[in-house]
Image: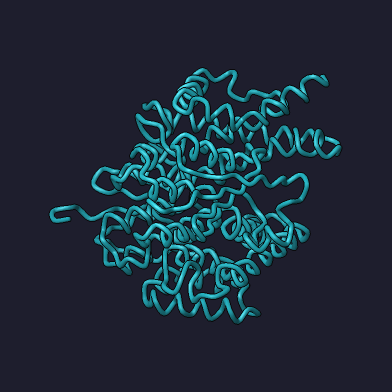
Length: 228
Length: 237
């Protein structure tokens, strides 16, 4: 990879998938620069950013002219091109398939329900000043509960990490999602020892890069719980 | 791959993702058997199927003891393990990343909006619930936005969603976009660019596409007749 420029990551660290990308870059010491795009200020809708990504979404990765969106694709691309340790995205087809299985399932499950809780508990009421819809929040929490049951009882049934005995991209994506509700002081894992242990394992494996990426979540938590 | 047993696919062909898996198996002549699981009869909730897949979802692939769910993962696994033509899931990182990019985007966009439309226009009425016109309108509007993006972004300068060749992305998308046909609605009919793309995809997939979609055509044709759709008898292939 000699002569290659550092990749450029366009991120808003309020976004769960953006944090996953940043953690992966840092943890694997992949040379990178970060351009912060603040969604709350509409910076993903500027003509400049829209030219880069017409979908107006983050994260976006730019690697020497190659522009890529979608955190799944970004992480898998980085894992392949930058020769990271195999456990992130194993080469063996059956092992790789397990990671692809989780990252697919993730969209309509972990990501969807975690985002919906965040929307109704933090974004609308605390950040946009709109009233909370208690029925919608209840439903979101209930859906998320179902997801957590499945994470515990299926993915983590007999193994230390979501896709096997080693940490992978699946754990990285999942943990960033499951940290999101902490923004309003809600620890959705607190009554679930199995998931708390899993989260600890993941945090240990990621050490500093995890806390650095999540600084914004902790800040929001402190800000919102101070109001109570 | 000598002495490998045929893979087993657990499918309900009313499901878009299941059709994609079947088409891929047939088109690439991957030795397989199909076990039909009828969602409308609750067959995904039997103790036997639940043991196979606790998520109680389809499709499921079983390859010599290795059980895999999620159509994305199944297609990518088959493409890798069975040495199919490279265009399906290219090895070159930038090209592969484009396919991964679409298959990720597919979930919250094409798949979500198609499924919602199908729910409100076909499924709920068939179950005796009144159609909610507002929700149907919203589903159509959301889907319209998705179709705009498919046309103007993915297909902006290329023949297929991820490049000049057909890939897993086109297969997944084409199966999704056929679903509203169950309710007699061709969502691509006013969009020549997407119609051309769909033709290209159908040509590339020839017989396997129509075989897999026979059920969709049947449901569409039975719409005004008051009878339930039936599954075709499927022998081991």
